[in-house]
Length: 475
Image (cartoon, rainbow, N blue to C red):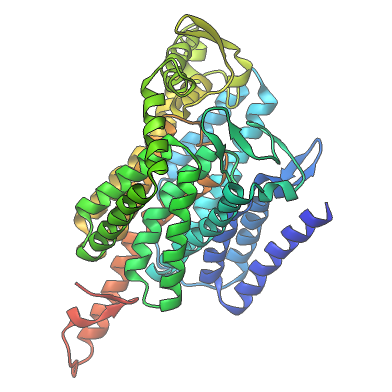
C-alpha cells in the first residue's frame, strides 16, 4: 500500500510542479504519458465505495489545474460531439436502470463517464496550439515506449512489472503473472490488462511515432522516437495478437499510399528491414505462418477462437430477440457474464463467458437503439477526420491521416475484442478523438494569425509561403 500511495502522490505532485514551471500545455503531454503508462494495479481501493486509479487521479488533477492555471483558448468554441456523447451517456444510464445487474451496470457507466468522456472534455477544451497536439502525441509514444521496454523484459527475462505490484482481479482473471498461451506460448502484456489490449495500443502508437519522426527537428527526440519504434515493433510481435498485427499492417499500408515522400521513404526502409529480419530469422516467419494456419484451421484452438466471434453474434441476436424491452435497451452495461449464454462450435457445447467483440457487447448490453447511439459518435469522428484530411492542404493533413488510421485500427479491433469500455487503450482513443476534433480549428487559427502578421509587415523579405509554423513550412 505504501508503494501505491507513493507512486500516485509522485504522479500528482509532478503534474502540479510541471504546471507551475512549464505551463498547462506541458501538463497535458505529461498527463498523456501517465494515462498510457500506469496499469490498473496501481489503484487505491476503498472497499464498498470506489477504486481510485492513477488515471482518475490524473484526471482530477487536470480538472483542478484547468481552472487554476491561465491558458490561451484557441480551439473550437463549441464542444465537438457534445450532443452525441450526452445521448450516449443518457442511454447507457437508462440501460443501467433496467439492467439485470443494476449496481454493476451503474458503476460501469459512471466509470466510463469519468475515465473517458471527462478526459475527452479536458483535452478538447484545453489544447491551445498545434505544437501542443504534437507534444501530447509525443507523450503517448513515450508512454508506449516505456511499456514496450517492460514487454521486452517479459519476453526475454521472464519477468513482468505487474508482479511488483499488488495483484488485482479484473475481467481476465487475477493479475501478476506471465501470460502463457497453450498454443502461442508467452504473450507479453506489459502494464495493460491483456496482450490484445497492449497490441491495440501499439497498433495506434506506431503510426503516431512515424509521423513525429518526420516533423521532429531535435536530434535527441528523433533518436528517442526511432528507438521507441524499434521497441514497439518488437513488443507488438511478442504480444502474439493477430488482430493488432492486421490492424497495424492496414494502417501502415494506408500511410504508404497516402503519405508524403518523407514518410513513404521511412515506411519503405522499415519494410526492407522487416524483410531482412524475416530472412535472417526464419523462425519469425514460421511463427507468423503457423498463426495463419491455426486461424484458418477451425479445428485448432486458434481457429475456434476465430469461429467463436461468429457464433457469439448469433447468440447475442437470439438473446436480444427474446423480448421487445430487452431488444430496445439491452440487459445493462457489464451484464454479459451474467447471461450464461451457451452455444456450439463444431458440435461441441461451449459456455460463452467472454464477449470477444465490442459491437456484440453494445448490442446485448444496450439494445439495438443503444448500439446505434454508441456507434454514432465513432462514425461522426471518422467522417470528420476524412473530410478534414481531404480539405486541409499538404503537409498539414498528414496528421489527419494519422488520426484516420488510428481510428480505423481501433474500430477494426473492436470487432474481435471487448476493448471499448476499459483500459489505457480506450483512454488513448478518446485523447486521439479530442486532438482530431481540435486540430483543424487550431491550424486555421494559427495560419490566419501568421497571414495577418505577414500582411502587416511592409518590409517582408520573403513571401508568406516561406514562413514556418511550429517547425513546418507553410504551404
